[in-house]
Each structure stands twice: as structure tokens, then as C-alpha cells.
Image (cartoon, rainbow over all chains, first blue to last red; front, side, top):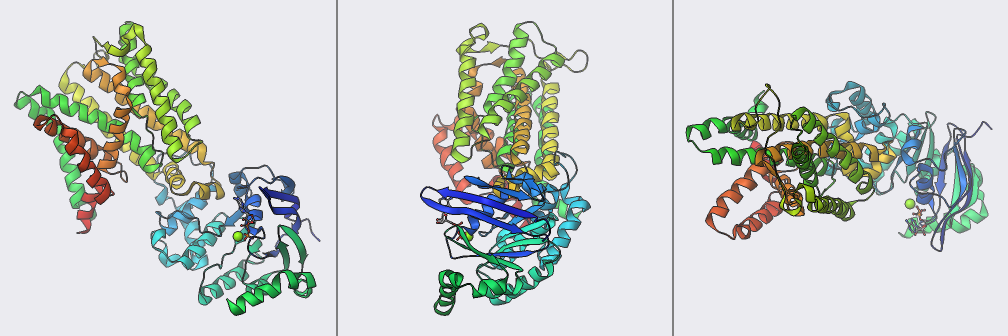
Amino acid sequence: MPEPLLEIDGLTKRFGGVVASDGIRLAVAPGELHAIIGPNGAGKTTLIGQLTGELAPDAGRIRFGGTDITRLPAHRRSLMGLARSFQITSLFLDFTALDNVALAVQAHAGHSFRFWRNARRERALREPAHKALARVGLVERAHCIVASMSHGEHRQLEIAMGLATAPRMLLLDEPMAGMGPEESQRMVALLRELKGELTILLVEHDMEAVFALADRITVLVYGRVIASDTPAVVRLNAEVRQAYLGEQEAVIRHG
Amino acid sequence: MRALANPRNLVVAAILIFLALVPVYAQARANPYLLSLFTRIIILAMAAVSLNLIMGFGGMVSFGHAAYIGLGGYAVGILAQEGITAGLVQWPVAIVTSALLAVVIGAFSLRTRGVYFIMITLAFAQMIYYVGVGLERYGGDDGLSIDRRSQFGGLFNLSNRTVFYYVCFGLLLASVYLVWRLVNSRFGLVIQGARSNDRRMRAIGFPTYRYRLVCFVIAGTICGLAGVLLANHTDFISPATMHWTRSGDLIVMAVLGGMGTVLGPVLGALALLLLEEALSGLTEYWQVILGPLLLAVVLFARGGIDGMLASLNRA
Ligand SMILES: Nc1ncnc2c1ncn2[C@@H]1O[C@H](COP(=O)(O)OP(=O)(O)O)[C@@H](O)[C@H]1O
Ligand SMILES: [Mg+2]
């Protein structure tokens, strides 16, 4: 196995009495699409938050590209090539879609203590932003105010902002949540395209998508890793079936 | 080019031309009061424009912005009292002290958000206010008369009211232009992004705190310069200039005029001070009329006067 791009060891996070991350140990190889599944409240979003630097872990270490990033602030991690999309859409609602993505480009184009030139006319910012929008299929919507766009489009825009920074690794927190079947299908197609270009950590509830896309799957329950393996092995894992998959199927059938 | 000739821009252009011609009119009517009133409006408009840079574009609602007006004014007053009347000393001293004060206030307050930010900026401004009250040597509570306006040698004579008006008007236009360049630059987009969604800004790689601090300092500095002008205008400086209600006035100007654009606060300053002038001529209780008027603007015209003008464009 090659040197992992992301290495998590003993990661622990408590919220009062709740142990949201319980000694998580996990490695993601370069180029891998690594899915994280687990029931609601399992600690998936909390894990992503610690990876991006929004939450400080109580214990454990995170290494990215061989560097210990456990204590780095969020913006530094982003500049190292770790990009995320938010489960709850987090965009600049009063800006246009293109402005949103161009800001992400700008964040990675040197410092922004530039006070005079009109940034909206800088091709070095606008062109990569356009490309990222085209990538997710939003290019005709470039000049729409984000607040007026649909939920599905917001999810696509989240991905475009991640891509615009040309990251080494993309952390996606339920990119398909709340999407219709057609939009979901497009998202799966996009993820399939991205797979191989960059390393992806995907948190997703859509099991069909996860098993179709993932190289490896980690199952999280009550903040603990109960399995981390290839889809074929995880599918057969009795503990996983009991703890999660069966319950999930029931939910899908009845809910 | 057709887009430029929309109703809103025509109104704004008319107002700017009007402002440029005020001294001519005042002279023709032999009405020095009018000139004095509009000088004051222009100076406070400049302060409101600077406040709007942080409040409207940056989402930093400072309730202590008048502190910089006072600081700029005291720099002029104290130096004059000590016999230093050279503008080339007074003005840079005022600008640098305002910037330093903004660094200190900003460094603390920008670690907080929302109501806490408002309260901390207010608390700092109140501290500065009481420092002013305590300056026995410089008049304390009663303030300090300024016998000579800032001297610029043969360059221009600020004691000439018309010259002074045009200096203020020029500096207002320069501030508006500066803020306009700023908000459209990379720097300005970071400031607006941080207002819109600071968490996301950090997630995409911006250390937003330092950008917001620099913005806060730029605004404080412009406002300090407005304070220099105000002290020269009134030939007087006192702690009352820094009272929290003065900071409130600046907020009202920005909100009334419209926070979404660079020129909004200029319209707001004009509207507020002219209304105040007209209403206080009618009744002692003019604030009873002004209050509901403000309420109506906030409730029914979110973009302020400028927003109403802009909606004419679409009509
Ligand atoms: N900021 C917080 N404060 C307190 N408890 C939290 C916080 N964030 C998450 N939790 C708790 O941590 C656990 C894991 O939550 P989360 O990471 O959101 O799970 P998931 O994303 O897998 O649904 C839950 O029990 C949740 O209630
Ligand atoms: Mg979650």
C-alpha cells in the first residue's frame, strides 16, 4: 500500500457525555474514494469537522500528506489542499454563483491585500471559476444570485467551490442529501468522473451510490469504527449488517 | 453607456452637482449659514461613508465610530493649543492616532460577533469619551476652542469658508472613490464574503480576521480625517463629539441612505441632517417625527434611500 494521503489515529472528541469520535483510526490512500457510512448521530460530520479544523479533537492525531495538521487552523488546511463541502449548505447567499466559486479560487491565489483592481474583472479568478461551474453543470446559472437557486443547485455549487481550489483531497458531507433521483444520478456521475483525479472522503446515506463508487468503506457507529474495508467485505460483515445495513434497508423500505 | 443614465444615477449626479455649487449659491444669497450647514453635512457624510465600509460591506456594526471623529478633532485641538498649527503635522498625527486606536479596538472587538461586537465597540468609545472629559488641561467637559485652523502655508487657507468647503467636498469624493475601489477589489470581496459567511470563508482558505482588522483600520482612519475637518469647521472640540449618540447618528445615516452602496451614506447624511434642520425649525420635539420616519425606512425600504432610487431603475 502506498503512503496514505490522510492518516487518522486515535481521534477522540467528546461533547459533554457524548463521545462523538471514539479513538478513530483510519487511512486513505491517494486516489482512493473512501466512503464513511453510519447511522445518524454516528459522528460522521464531527469527524469531517475535525479534519477541516473547525472542531478541535480532544485526543488523537491527523496527518495529511505526511504533515501533522492536528492543530492547524482551518484556512491553513484548505491552503494545503484539503477542501470540503458542507452537509448543511454553506454558501454566500447574496453573491452570484460565479462570485462564490471565484472567491474560492481567490483564496488559493496568493494573499488578498489587493485594494485597487476590480476582482470581478480578473480573468485569473473568473476563468477557473467558470471551469469549476461547468464541471458540475452550473455554467448557465453562473450569474444567478445563490439565494434564488434550488437546493440541488446549492449542492452542486458546494462541490464546485471545493473543486475550484484544485484540492488534493475533497471531503464531501452527504452531497446527495435532499436531492431528487435525477439530481442524485448526476451527482453520482460527477463523483465517478472525479474519482481517480483526486482523493475523496465521501459521507453518504445513499447506499446504492456508496457501494457503486467506493474503493473502501468505513463504518462508524457511536463514534467508533466497526469496519473499514472493501465494499465486498463490508457488505458481508455480520456486525455491520446488524448494526447498520439492515436497519438502513428497513428505513429505505418503510420510510 | 445607456445603463449609466438610469434614474438613480441621474439623481445622484444631480445631488453631487448641487453639492459642488452650494458655495456659489450661498455667496449669491449672502447666506453663510447655508454654507456652514452643508460643510457639516459633507464632513459627517464622509464619516458615514467610512462607517458603511465596515458596517454595510463588512457586517461589522460599530457603535463607537464617533470616537475617531473625536480623536481626529482632539489631535488638531491639542496640537493647536500647544502651538503646533501646521496642517502637515496635525493631519498626519490625527490619521496615525486614529489608525492606532482602530487597531486596538479592532483587535479586541473583531474576536466577537453580533451584539458583543456592538457592545465592545461602544465600550471602547465610552472610554475614549471619558478620557476626553478628564483632559483638564484641554477643557475637560467644556471642550477646547481652536483659535487657528490647520495651516497649509500658501497652499490653501482653510479660514476661507469656500476653500474649506471645497477641501471637505474633495475629501468626501476621494473617500467615496477609495471605498468604491476597495469594495470591488479582491480585498473588498473578502470583506463581503466574511460578512456573508465567515465560516465558509475560513473553510475555503481565508484567514478572515486579519482582512477584517485592516478594513476596520481603514474605516477608522477615514473617520479620523473627518474629525480633523469637523474640528476645523467648528473651531472647537469637546467630548460631546464622541458621545455614543453621535455614533448612533452615523449608523442612522448609513441605514437611512442605504448600506448596500458606497454612496448611500452620503444620501443618508443629507437626508438626516436636512430633516433635522427642517423639523427642528417646526417644533422642539422634532425627534418625535424623525423616529417614526426612520422606522418606516427600515421596515419598508430595506435598501434605504439609495435602494428606493435603484428600484426606480427597474420600474
Ligand atoms: N456541537 C455539538 N455540540 C454537542 N453535541 C454535538 C455537537 N455536534 C454533534 N454533536 C453530537 O455528536 C454526535 C455525532 O453527531 P454528528 O457528527 O452530527 O453525526 P452524523 O453526522 O453522523 O449524523 C451526535 O450525538 C450529536 O448530537
Ligand atoms: Mg452529519
